[in-house]
Length: 447
Ligand code: UD1
Ligand code: MG
Image (cartoon, rainbow, N blue to C red):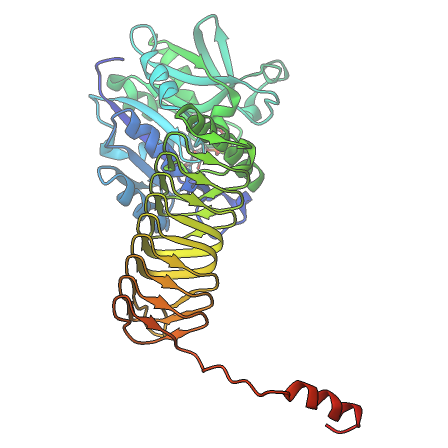
């Protein structure tokens, strides 16, 4: 790695009109994270904590996101969209003469830190500029790399290219590195005499070559520099990212029975010997400890699962679900903002929200914590070893103490003492012979 520190400029000014969205393009998500977040993560992986992000006017949501994810980053507004070189210059004072410049795009989220590092390592003596190129299956629309061996002579935008140049399949990804001492000079020397009337960042190559500073290029897979302009490309990027995340999860010791059906987030943590059955979705913020089995068709987000627990099939862990060791959360059970201690079970058809469930407690089928009164959320406490009979409604705030037993079908509104039985339903009434009398009355034509 070169010694010179690096300044990353991330272009995120695109409105993304072809996405037909009210949201700035770079905020569209891939694997539970806005595209821009992936680029920021790549920069962070390279130790760069001071990226400059160039946004368009009125993109406050992008600014807030950057401030949250990378507080050290500076934000710059490109008020007029006059081209990629103009956009980089919008970073102003952030373009420091003592730092090599690396320009990334907020809508090119799959680029790997190693590739960026390889690119910046290729500038230096003999090459003040380096472009990241790829062999395009269909090069239409891309800038073409005009090369001579290892040397890069120019990048020709599709619109400005001759037929001969358009036959070139080696294309520009857009990602470029420029040597620190000349970066600003080169950018400022770029004109806008081209088909689009824009200041093209790509022209930094020709300017460098004219000045005898030289330029070069490296290659990467086309997939890695997939740019997202449409929802279809967003889906293609998602598919690619999912494949990477699945491979990583398996490499780290989780079994994905049918990996192509499992959807992960960038921050999903799966322990060793976790088995994930088909059709499981991990939203952001999920941590799963060792030896857990996540059974088919479960959905988890912002949840923690302890060693050896079994989740699903068809379970839903919502934000704040914290499932203890060897606990069991079965089919059609929804858990939100609740701690379920070790060995507790909720095996069928239940809603547990804003609750604490003690170790070894048993939550019967159809148990509902009635946590919301139409105004506020309230807490339900269920003690260790408690037994909640099926189809019980626990009206919060309420406490079921350790070892207590709730009769099936109860509506519980008051604290239940340790080891007590509480039954909160009408007493059973039986009328002997009633059914027989009823049938006979109907036969006689009476009501
Ligand atoms: C650019 C490259 C092209 C490359 C292609 C790869 C230039 C001149 N061309 O073309 O060689 O093959 O990317 O996808 O760089 N942007 C701004 N402000 C502007 C203009 C653009 O922030 O004034 C941002 C856009 O939001 C986008 C990126 O820069 O994220 C690239 O701009 P775009 O207009 O998409 O360039 P392309 O024509 O795709
Ligand atoms: Mg583009």
